Amino acid sequence: MKIALIGSFSPKFLHSSKLSETFELEEKLNVFMQNRTYCDLVDEISIVIHCSEPEMEMLYPIYRPKYVAEQNQTIHSVLDIHLYKILMFNLKVGYESFYNSNKKEGLRIIAQAILETLETLKYPVKLKKFDKLGFYNDMKTFFIEEGLITVNG
Amino acid sequence: MATFTYDGSGERSKMEIKRYNNSQILRYYLNGSHEVDVTPAGEKERLYLGGDAYSAPSVLVKENGSWNIYYICRDHLGSITQITNGSGVMQQELSYDAWGRLRNPSTLAVYAPDTEPALFLGRGYTGHEHLTMFGLVNMNARLYDPAVGRFLSPDPYVQMADFSQSYNRFSYALNNPFSYVDPDGENPLFIGLAILGAYIGGVASNNGELNPIQWNYSSVSTYFGIGLGAITGYFGAYGIVHPGSMIFAGSASTPWMTIGASVTSTGVALGDATDWKYNFNWSTAAGGGGGITNSDNTNSYRNIDKSIQNARDSWNYSAYAYASSSLLLLSDDVTGIGVANDVLIPIAYGGATIAFAYDNSALIAKQAKEIEGIAKRTLSNKQGFVYQLQATKDGYYNDVRGGKVYLNTGDVWKYGQTVNERRYSLNKLRNQNLIRVDIYQGNQMEILIHEKIMIYGYTIKNGHLPPGNKIFR
Image (cartoon, rainbow over all chains, first blue to last red; front, side, top):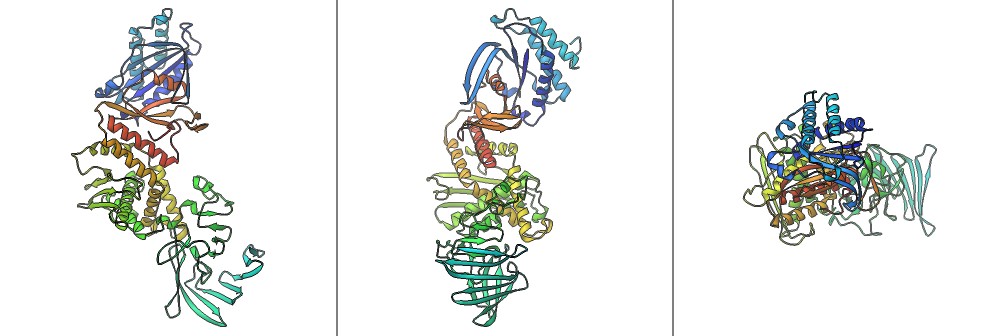
């Protein structure tokens, strides 16, 4: 299965390395997840990570998770989008701690936020057969292997 | 028809120009400083003294069997501007436009084809021979057409492999001839005030440092100060030359200076209707400088100022810096003086600045007008953001104008603004190897202006719109 970790940060982060660090984590995560599946209906999980100053949070709302079985669309006139068996959800990380963190601390904050979100995530009804616990455990294992969290969280 | 003959070492030894098969000029080049003309009117010899034909301050001319001395005045490029006889009486005065076209020195109007005067020495722009009957300048290795600023044949060498202008092998002097400081070829006041403005801007953005050698050329503020000063000076000159077309107001105060310029135009130069107004203004109190602030903090222009300031902070001016430094290199080639002690540095920077402003004057004016239009609109205080969609991988991306364009990771594909976070747009963009990076937050007016500045800035820098932007919004 493929995982997309998409950083969506406020302009305060424009000159920070958080976006590229998120990309790095995504690459490693995809290597780890390469041969794993949790449901025939899901080929990709897209996780958007928002972070902004508190006064700008309204620009980055949290939506209910959404599942798209298949969708074709053209956006911005020339971008032909093809979404296929994809689960999408977004989450937020705290501004002060994330903005002021170093690379390791920042990734740890992301790891913890993802696991906390997965613990309570309400999956779309179409994904009743999705192996939620298996996915959660694998994500946790990955973060432990990366040294971002401990066995006890 | 012109025929050129070269000796064994590749030096031109003879030129003959015929019209209807009758010889008009037969010129022999005996060495770098001795020439003989044979024309239907008779023979004429020239022996340059104190240098060669490109640098000599005087010349002995043999006419009607007797030798007479003439003195040659040249400008910084080596172009012949005046020739006087031994008594100091003017023999001929010459003038050129930015690209070397001969023009009437009294009116500064370029001569119409076939009306150019015969040159007393046969030479003019940068000391080269003018072939007036063809409207060309013989630059030895190649023939140059000053009407279009292009050579007739390509340069066999790429002089600066890392400079894109080098790859236009027909262009003259990397498209930045030193005398390009006069963009119109109409009035030197434009240049003078533009350079003065550039100098003042440089001083202001360097904490009052009067010596340009000491300016911090690695600072964006320096370029910004120079650029804004040049633009202000240029517009001011336009207002002076065309009374009533512009109202120009300026002020200066200590400790270094606060420069304010309010330009109101009825718009011949800016191609705009009446009621166009835009403020260029920046202040430098002791210890700081180069920023833009509006002197009037009570009107809606505060929003513009804020957006411009933010755009200035986030915009990469390296292209502009490069244009300036390239001109420095060129001027150094021309003057032969080392850059470090080249007294022409401020002039070179002024020249680069005004060239930059002139090259992009239409865009700058259009941008200013559109910003003015936004400022007049009634917009809500709803918050939004300006974003750039940038490539997450090296590769080819669709261009909204057709075809594909190669982008490196991090290159911008499109600028946009929105007041609504689109629920799934991030996932869709990722599907196309693009990511949305939010670059500015503000109210509707602020984000509209900021988006405009970013799109125009990209276009000025790259010569085309971002691949994902169809128009300037």
